[in-house]
Length: 177
Image (cartoon, rainbow, N blue to C red):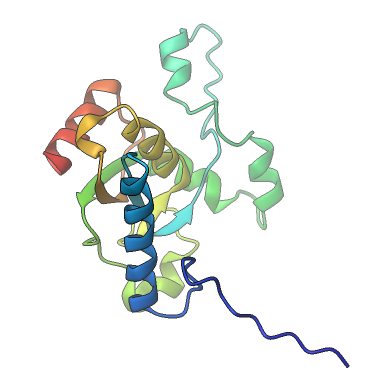
């Protein structure tokens, strides 16, 4: 019989330990610096949600209002795929926890002992990150000079509205300046 022993590449994190993870990050930073590139590490907690949220029935909605519903993310059919009851907690999360908070470094707390209850919760919980908020933070960090060569975490804030352009600018300035 054939046996296979996995030997991880020394520059790739293999999920083994915190020390290996810190070394992986140092490798990423070093590789970027060696080729003259900036680096940014975006830290996420438990990823939740990720689709468009409510799709307002008001067809008179203008383009800027429609853009605040994150139509660029997963299609509403995501909710049908994740539904185990009358309504999916993912939809409730995407409608009620659309706000974002940023923190410089690896300082956001995790869910701790509440993880088992928070994992499928539709409310704001410590240690949670909305997929849409993380994706937006990653893309927007490319446009923000203060996001170069830093790491930051993305958490959730209870809100029915996604952050506006001005709020995103303020989040980055307050967190990274």
